[in-house]
Amino acid sequence: MTLTTLLQLVSAGLIAPEDAPGLAPVAETFRVAVTAPMARPELAAQFVPSLAELLTRAEELADPIGDHAHEPTPGLTHRYPDRVILHATQTCEVYCRFCFRRESVGASGHLPEEALTAALNHIAKTPAIREVILTGGDPMVLSPRRLGDLLARLAAIPHVDVVRFHTRIPVVNPARITEDLIAAMDIRPAVWVVVHTNHPAEITPEAAAALRKLSRAGVPLLSQSVLLKGVNDDASTLETLFRALIANRVKPYYLHHADLAKGTSHFRTTIAEGQAIMAQLRGRLSGIAQPTYVLDIPGGHGKVPIGPSYLAQEADRWQVTDPKGHRHAYADVTRGDVQPPAPAPILAP
Ligand code: SF4
Image (cartoon, rainbow, N blue to C red; front, side, top):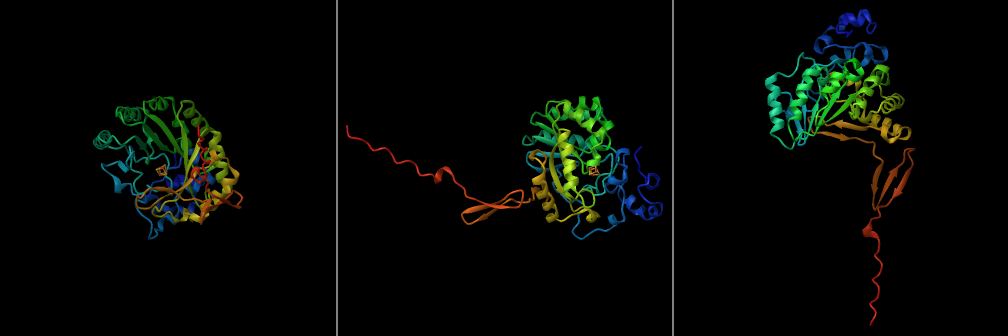
């Protein structure tokens, strides 16, 4: 059963009875939903309301990554020329307390037909769009029938090559990964799934089975995680998570620096702390288990890698730092630097 009230969280032992009344304003501001596999002490901080959410810092934003600054039609974000984000629903299976879309997710129901048609028309008349990203709310909360209908309409647009799901469903409610859902995903455009997961305890045997179903169906699997203070801000926790992901055929893709969403400062690390964790992972994990540490620049200016950097320029050479922290000089030698052999003398006949 999904826990949606403070009383249920008290009954599950996730909050103390005496704390519940004080948390009522928090739960009213941002919905509560904790599925059974997530109702565990080591995962609670991601889903259980906290008084710290009532503290909004001056730099925090209602729309930290600028979804609405690039919205040609309601429910559609068109930030980069070749891809769009389609918010087919605002509903999620769980509500994460650090979510950068916490101001917009939580409403029940899917995008109204009129808005969906307008969004699909925008995609159809824009040949530069090659990829459609279905995300926040969670697109996999839609029924296989509704999802199948949406995917068929996207597949009918010839220039759409890729449909990418961003979802927490395989870990927070793996029972939703049914054969019907997988059949609905079998369309002409390549369907990719990016699983959002932050802690190794989320990769339960049931989650592993759901991931196996997807990979057996030929769906490429990537993951995204958010670096969260008190949840996964240490190299050992992330190492265990990334090892579990690659063991389940999921390539760790991005580790996000936590966004400037309102009331989430208690989850944020500094960038220097994130870089130090990434540097530790560089020496401990194989390349296929390494995500890229990224920041969504506040205001909708795009997402960029934020290090750590292993390269510094010095006059005519580079200084390269190895995974143990030792520095090495490296000089570029290109074909143009090599002296060509002298031409052979022309001998008189
Ligand atoms: S959009 Fe993703 S991160 Fe945000 S509440 Fe929903 S599941 Fe959690």
